[in-house]
Image 1 (cartoon, rainbow, N blue to C red):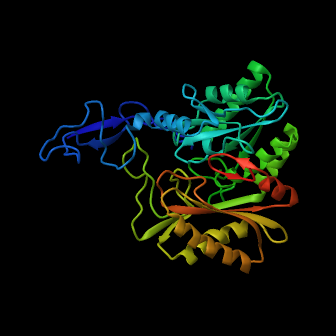
Image 2: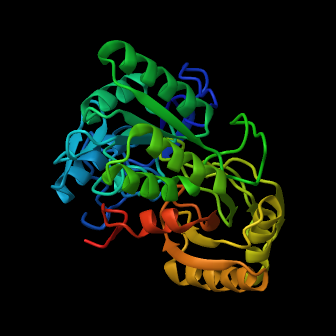
Length: 386
């Protein structure tokens, strides 16, 4: 038995994770354990360069998770082009010249966000950081220059300190180096907390998915950068989200849950990196959980008198059958509140690794937003109308 030590890097939520040797996370590794493919009593069979963590993860090692996942994306999706050096996912066939390009990104661990939304009708490129770690400004610079089709690039940024700073610097570098016109929308739809330990202002969560779809459709139509930005800002201003965690998530490099959550409790208002929410309360049934998510959203914005798009999103570790149970309860609450649900989406769209739980996003729409939502989309994470 030996202990392998992993240094942690700065996270996209802005928390400075020291990479100095004194501040590390440890994962206990049993290199002599029997394996199913070994003869009984044979402690061998484990390659010398392979580490086996106590945490059950389908990975080769924490250090190679990002590179290995990008290799899998490249192998599974020929319609995408993966730049493994810069850790950027592009459309294999760029959109037509003269159209606005959309760029987003963030730490991995939220799949299918963001790489799963690269394709027709959504993003042109996505920058991938390490797990829960912001991409670098150099990645944003490279992706912005490559994705630009002569009409400018819209950066879609979730409101986490690391993401905001690095995208801002990337945009400045792109403008200085190549003259690309860059517009930025910062998504801040989480009603759970106004200011947290990790952000200035509200966190960016589920509305990001809806915004990438709707703004992406506007760009495909040929709207100019100012018009695409206006659509994106309208979506952000009209969307609200709230989440709940039943369990923590486990970052591969940490090898243990991010936070302790007893079996009989849940975290209301949790962030997508495991950030604290509004309160920790006793575990309840689906109807009560739905009420605790929906009521703060409706208290924050009036959604009556207009059609809405509602997303019931899984955080990565909750089966689809339970997400539909939750959606039934959310739908009942919205109907009782006099809110018209014009479109709905149920599934895992912005996750937190293996966290059990869900989030609710409600977007106040109009005819233009609904038309853009219904427009064709062809990505690995969303596909219709093709």
